[in-house]
Length: 202
Image (cartoon, rainbow, N blue to C red; front, top):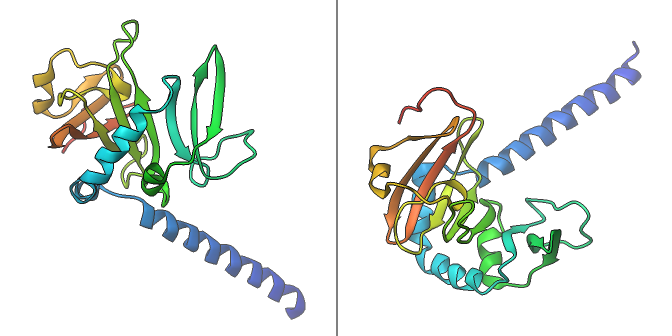
């Protein structure tokens, strides 16, 4: 192979390596571990409480708030903040203009905000869940949630049968494991480890 043919190949390989490292670097800056997530709560408690007030003012059918930049929504013709939910059996996604929620979702550290409301059939209660980009193992999700009654709640707003149980650390949740702890009043840190047959070690 001549030098003229080798140079473009080498240039392409170098370019691919460069973009791979750049993307990983950007993702790395937006991922947080447990200590960083807890510190985020301590540093932004006032903003988070303001966000709760904004979220309670949204329509009842809305169960997700996110940013198309970090959580694209297929079929949408807009960019930025949006809400998603189910209304009359149909999925409804609309753009959202809200500076407080945008401040939390603007840099990708928080992937989405999930909203759970009381549902006797699902056993759910009020919960606002902020899912972070977690620097951890595969299948592990983590973040924070707001509990209106200041008691621990399971994943996706499922009511805990025994609120005192969370003090024991990881608990079985179907085939999964769940952990939560209070950070400040009404705000809890959580981790969910999916598809695990072994209790995680802390």
